[in-house]
Image (tube, rainbow, N blue to C red):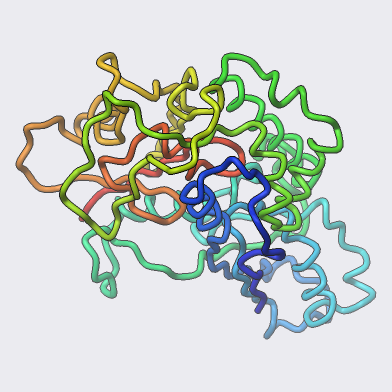
Amino acid sequence: MSAYGTTRHHGQPSANSTPASTTLFRRLTWEGTVPLEIRVDSKELPANSDRGLECYYIQAPRVSYLPLLMPEIRRFLMDVVFDEAAGKMLKEEEWWFESEEGTLLKWHWPIGLIYDNHIISASIRPPSQTSTSHYNLQVTPLKLILHLASPPTEKLLLSPSAESCKQAFMGQLKEADFIRWGNTKRMTGLRKQDQDGIWEGIKEHNFDDYWRVASKVVPTTAPARSNSPPPSTNTSMHARPPSTDPQSAPDRDNAYNVRSVPVRLYLPDGPVMQDVVSPTLEDGSPHTLVHYLSTHLPLLFPPVPYSGPELAYAMMHGVLVPPDAEMAWLGACMAGADGWVSLCVGIVR
């Protein structure tokens, strides 16, 4: 079994102008991990393999990608499972994953998003006898099947390789950059060294290296405007701190001054809904999660007044998001490493 460290290097935040609370939530998001159980398809094991050890467990970083786990998985299989001669014949670029249920896994999705999407898909199935939560959330290893040959590239859309994953990741960053600012000048203006460095931060799971570059692209929080509503008097263990910080950021970097927040909604066994979300409403007040969900998914999140039972929930990075969270704040503090606010919607049982 392998476990990544929460982060490989600890140090001071790379962006001195970034408020402390923003850096805190970004680090908490970065350090999240998920348990994976990876089993080689028994029909594809090379001759003379040890069939009692073909299962590998790893605590993988949420912000990482499946292709980046391949070298470590290969080392384990070569050292413990495969016959040396037969193992050398295998081509790592032909390896691919599917879930235990037979669903092809998308290489260009972060591992944490794959895990959360599996959780919400399970929310529409009958709950297991061991489930004790009406959200049907259980932190158990995601069981993956590793195939060693014949990747279905026509269904995977891109080849299962780290280089293809890098290209897809950079494309996501540029798309999010355009949605936020109306152009991609911040991304395209980066030196090649910085563009490569932002991917190296993901590859090496290095928080400081990643944010040293990402802080030039991603907005930050700033003192709330005078027309913002006062903070709620109801406190909760899930509530985020207010978006005020003693340290201000330049207006051009303010999360509430972006053109739009890049958002994707993931529904159980359903389509992915991509949207551009204004950080504020017409009256100038912050655009909250509950307003956004009740507008776009009114059957699952009925608009107020509504006194019936809770029907659905929104999750990011494995955490239930409080309804009063501001979309601009989510975009600055809890967006994925690819720049997107990825909201997974599950059904309450």
